Image (cartoon, rainbow over all chains, first blue to last red; front, side, top):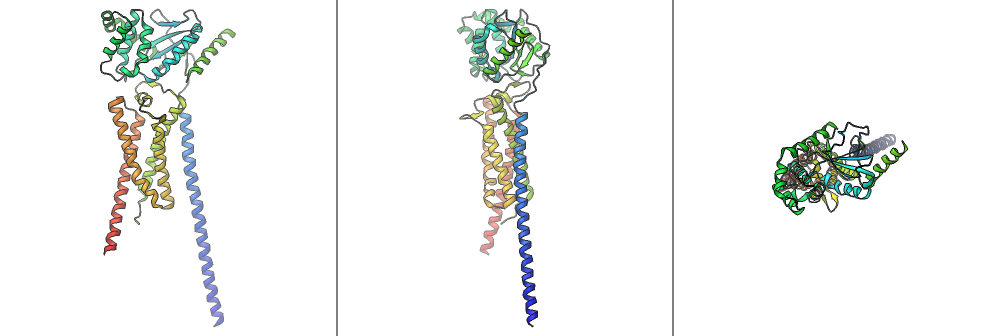
Length: 245
Length: 153
């Protein structure tokens, strides 16, 4: 009787122990599972951010020299015309990035213009409906000797005309502010000569592998400066390289 | 408490992860490069460089990344703990993201007049999350009604 009781108790205890063990094991498994789950989440999120940060902002750098059309009398050149160092920009007046780079380039020419010559070439992108009219307006102003003045005007007021349906009228206003002969200005920007100039600039860009604006070439090499300091460094570098060789 | 179908939670995870990758990429581009160039055949430069792309200096893409990450964490948290608070986030937060996406679409169409692929991808993700959120909302409402009816009977 007593023995039987004991075994019953024992059996009960045994069962209880086993249940406890099972419970502990399940609990342990759950904790491990949870750790694995959140560990995986952290690894996947962290890994993808790391991967993306490597892709973002690092477009392939072409440091090899490309075949660039030589500077011709058709090109608009400023800075030191005699300098050995040449900075060429392929640019689109309606491109916000070109507008953002404009003050950097302007400052660079003002502060270090004696060290290099700067060439502006048109690369109006198709998605910018006012980019071509802007290029024509600047070329037409150039015919009256005010290329750089009009370039500055158009970049500085980029926000005013970019999305406008009457950009041509706005450009006319700039021409008037610059004191240009308006009749001549209107005729010139409609002329085949001006349109051909813009087109030939664009084609020379395509030949040089330009696929985005602004694209800068320093002595034939594509550079991607992110700020003024990097720009100045690039110029300094080619000059020291040039004087060493 | 109603059983939330696993496929629904997994969908939340997958869609919000896509949105998270998309908007993180844009945020990283924003901080890495400073100035995004304009590419041939892309309107992204105009959208991401526009003055609507940041609010008080914070890029909208970063807000987007936070939004998608919150949903992602909430869905996984629910899968893990079955905590009903996570469901609340999954029910209501997608509506906020969807409205924000609609506003951005309006800006792209009518104000900036340029469409950016990454922003459209984000719109698709946030719309899908919104639909999933609605489904969850209906599911929970039905369940509550059933519970209520049960009590009356």
